[in-house]
Every structure is written in C-alpha cells, then in structure tokens.
Length: 241
Image 1: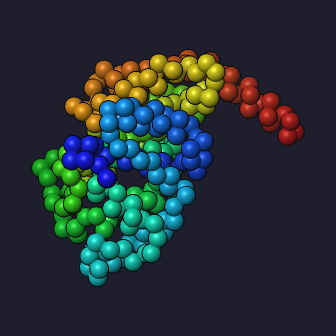
Image 2: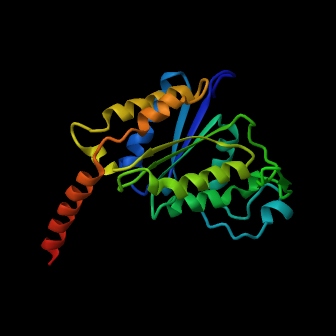
C-alpha cells in the first residue's frame, strides 16, 4: 500500500511478446525512472489477462451501473486504474495504430464512465467519470518503420480517448526503428536515458519539452535503415525460394 505522498504509476503493455518485446524494453526504462523517484510502479501484461470483447450492450450503464456483464480480469484492472496517478498505455504499432489486445482492453472502460454526455466549446464530447482530475496519461509505442509519421493515427487516437475520459494526453514516448534496440551497442542508448528521465519527471512537475525532444531524436538514417532491412528480408525470402 502506497503512502499518501507516493505516486502510483500503472502501465498496461499489450505486446504479445510481453516482457521480451521491444515495447517492454522502452517501458522498463520509463518505469525504472519513476521508481527511482520513489513511485510505486506496476506493469500489467494484457496478453496474459482474460479480456472479453465489449458487446456494446450498455449493461454497465443501465442494468448494473459500473459493473460489466463479463466475468473476466477487467474489473480488477479497473480498480487499479482508479488508484493510479499515472497510466501508461504501451503498445507496439500494428498497421499505424494500437494492436488488437490494447483496443479490446480500452473498449471495456465504459463501466468507469457515466452514460451522460458533456459537450464542450472546443467540439469535444465526453462522459463524466471517476478518475482523478490530475491523472496523467502517457502513450508509449514502438514500430519497425523508421521515422515518427507512422505513429500519427495512434497519437491522435490516444489524444481523443484521453479527452473523452475528461483528461488529456500528457506525453507520447515513440520509438521507430525498434528492431535496432536489440543491437549491442544500442544506437538509441542516449534516447533511452531520456526515457528514464521522463519516468522521473512524470511523477514530479511533468515531462519537460527538453526530455521529449531528447528521446524523440533520430538514432538512425532512415534510408540506410530501410536498405539494410530490405537486404536482410531478401536473404530470408531467398532461403524460402
């Protein structure tokens, strides 16, 4: 049980590779940074949880308010979310967006909100909810493509989901060319140190723009990366042929 001043940083990692994936490699640096500042940290591997598909039945709004009809692992995860000061949604990029495991989980957050709608002057419509007003949402994602543009649909989705929940996306930690993270020496070692710093800052005054710029700096020439990767893929295909 955390003390009154201790921050609780909760991460949901939806990679099917769980702790062995590139997403976990980046997330671990972030969580280590938060822990170094005394935060309580916990990572949930969604691929290990039983998560049923949302049926869109609105049972959790009008029949048993706040309680989903499914009997699976999600209610216990909701309890953790309501206690968290920082929530990280960590997903590998699949077809320019979150993977199906993360989407299935996020589809199930309806019990945390009321059915009533609130329309804001900026055009955003949201639901009343029980989450903390100062809750910080962080998106973390890795991708095999070089460059950040392929993350655009995912970032937009994360921003809108945070707004619908009455909050905002505090920061996005995005690592393209993620297959290079396994190299020794790691070409993104400096960027990963900024991820550690982001974890430290998120439980304090917030992640600074300097830190965002630090972990967002390119660590590979995209043309050279594509050429090298394509040569490797051709070798694999030739073995099949």
